[in-house]
Image (cartoon, rainbow, N blue to C red; front, side, top):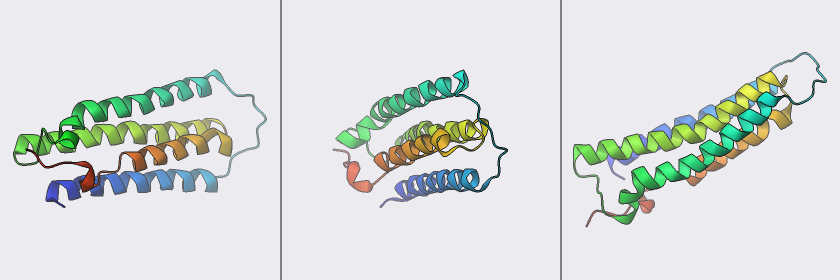
Length: 140
């Protein structure tokens, strides 16, 4: 594993641990009981989350596609910068879904069905976007 790949993997691990922290915080917080109906804000958050999920795959293909096909390598500083920046963009889109779940959980007084699907989806996306060295072919 090259040093730049290790840096990206450390960033990935930190973002995954923050998702776990969001879930722990929401499950341990105490909220006032509420029987409010789902609001329009919850639907807007769901739409944004679905859009971010689709965009994460598109950006991964656009920004990191050359590394997976072997057209780009990690030899020069520009390619290493593109490798790190591309992963950060993809991770931010995936992490953003968990943040939306955290916000929705707070707005919904901590109800599990308001935040758990978002944080679960975010963790699943982070696992799908894991920066394993085997996913990237060396440049030709």
